[in-house]
Image (tube, rainbow, N blue to C red; front, side):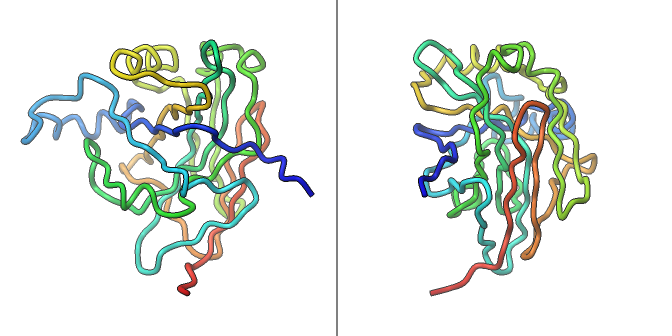
Amino acid sequence: MMNTHWMPEGTVYGTLLNFQREHALWAPRMNEAPYKAPPSAPVLYIKTANTFTAAGHGIALPAGKPVVVAATLGLVMGDTGVAGAVLFNDVAIAHDSYYRPPVKFQCVDGFLGVGPECVPLQRLGGLVGLSDLHLELRINGVHRQTTALAELVRDATTLLADVGEFMSLRTGDVLMLGSDCLPDGTRPLVHAGDTVEISATGFKPVVHSFQAEVKA
């Protein structure tokens, strides 16, 4: 049977500090060394191809390391701009860094849960319509977080323009808008045996199960 799940065909970029609550929580530290100022441009990181996990598949958790999950929306580039949007579960080993997110925490095998479909942008009301979306995150059926895209620091249009000032996005690339933290500044933890579902109006839910890593 042919796999009909959508999967990224280009580079996937994530965006840090793009929600108002988390930006405000980090603000007192932004003037400390070595940076001594808030970031003037979007803070990006890469989710490498080894992290991609299709919807409905399992994600292995490294032993002894706290792992967090985050709901986010990715803009998929087409030939003439943004072609559509995809829900993602951005998984990472918990860490305390924002200017230089360590690859070893972000790019563990399987650590990007990919939504099953790319929804055409016109069905979502264009880039402006994305601000009406709320991303719901549930663990084992229990609601853990609602992420409102109206609370972005840089909305989709502004983020695309600002990223375009220093790099080009090619057809097939994905730019994730960022993920929000919980009120205490953390993100939801996930454990072996958990199932995480991320949903939003107009999208099929993104469901991934988590299990303990099995060493060869």
